[in-house]
Length: 342
Ligand code: PEP
Ligand code: MN
Image (cartoon, rainbow, N blue to C red; front, side, top):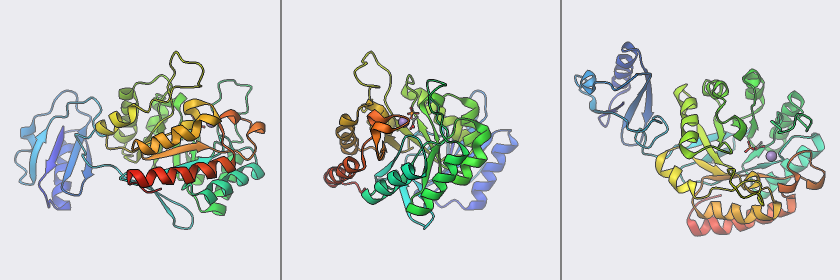
């Protein structure tokens, strides 16, 4: 159910409707927009009677939401969600609502020298967010699992050094507080898209979340995973298309660029593209990155390693600093054509 308030409703009037929702035993989710405030209601089993809100003069209408995903849907919020990440020097990376953000850095934090070389290079080339995994969910338990707490400390150093906000992956809810201290954004990886305990945990955090599409997840399952996070009160979710598993094995994954315009119609949340995991091949990354800009995605996540041949994870898909720099120049040309800003 969505309760739409009349234009100009005061905070006290909004609060009164929220109180009523709580009295009924449900959870109110106020969604401010430039034209109106709407209040999404969750926690009800079955449909609610709109007449329960009819006596509030500030209520314009109370309408059921037809989709199973509610808070993330355009039915609840028509305007694009914009999320801001603030770096240590006050620089703001905006995600959604017409700006284009590039997040870049190594797949995994491997050490100070490697991280700083990657971080300096991506900052110099114009990336707005630094990525790097400290906790790595690897297919094999014998592969490098990440530097963990030591990796977080290095990310904090790189954050100070470059001024860039940091996004890093969380794989275990028990690491939430430590990661919150070092990172500006929490990444939920493809392998954990339906790890509901993890979704609930990041939903209770005040840090924005980057939610990657599971490798076998349909778009509606991605939206339902985002709904878990929003339902817990964290509405700052960015979706990420990172390729899905198909019958094609020549590429690591099949980057489902066709999902982007569909997702943008269904949800107000921003969606970015990861062409690195999306193809698995360094040579294919620039073309897919340019395609993502051209089709109106809200940003990119790109893996960059100072020496990809020696990388402890995802070397074959990592760009060198020089090729990343070249890519950024070509992205700007496309951004100009489609009227977005890098
Ligand atoms: C990553 O971004 O480092 C990663 C592990 O990606 P994904 O979860 O998309 O496989
Ligand atoms: Mn990777």
